[in-house]
Length: 93
Image 1 (cartoon, rainbow, N blue to C red):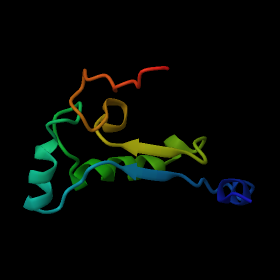
Image 2: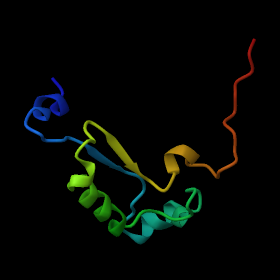
Image 3: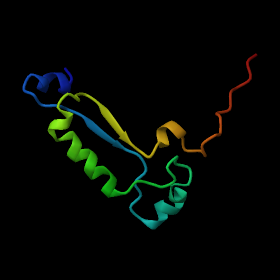
Image 4: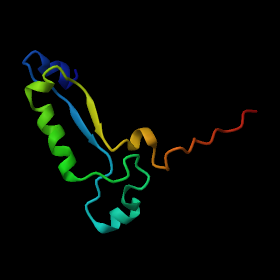
C-alpha cells in the first residue's frame, strides 16, 4: 500500500519535493552552463527549496497528499535543450 494511503487516516500527508538542477560546485555549474537552457535562465539554489518545504509542512497544504512537487525552474516543461526547439520526429515509413 502507498504511504500516502497508509498515513492519511492519521492526518499525515506524504509528498515528495523533486528538485531539478542544483549544482554545488563550479564544475557542475559550467556543465549546466549556469542554467542557460532552463526556462527561468538559472539553476536552482538551496534557498529555493526552503520555502516549498515550509509550505508543505504548513496548514496551507493540509489537503495536498501523494504529490510529486517539481521545483526545477521549468526545466521539465522546457527540456534540457533551449526553449523553442521542437523534438525531432522520426520519419514514418
